[in-house]
Amino acid sequence: MPKVIFIEHNGVEHVVEGPTGKSLMQVAVDNMVPGIVADCGGSASCGTCHVYLGAPWSEKLSAPDDTELSMLDGVLHGSAESRLSCQVILTTELDGMRVRLPSSQM
Image 1 (tube, rainbow, N blue to C red):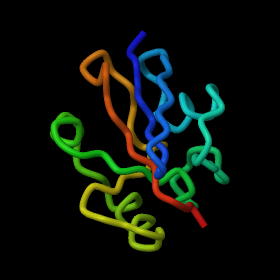
Image 2: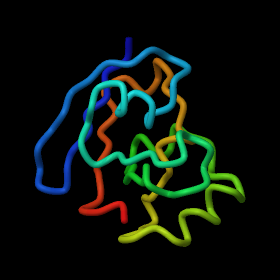
Image 3: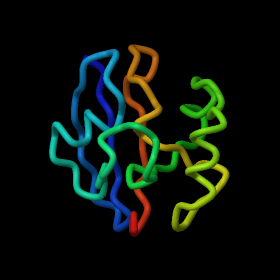
């Protein structure tokens, strides 16, 4: 199973594993990673699973669709590296991915 490193805004790291085909949001929730609220359960309708994905990881993903972009417009602390973790599906190519979390989801 691919490993994912979730990094809280204060630098605390959570190294977890998740099966391919699951979203980063679900992997975080399954492993009780703090900072992923996931109010909508993964339907890209709330923005509370907001994360930052920088290079090289962002380059391995398809671009956000219109629904995700619309939700990202309303997140706190948004940036060019912002993604909704419910829309990022774990693959073997993402093994070792470093995912930074914002200081707040609300």
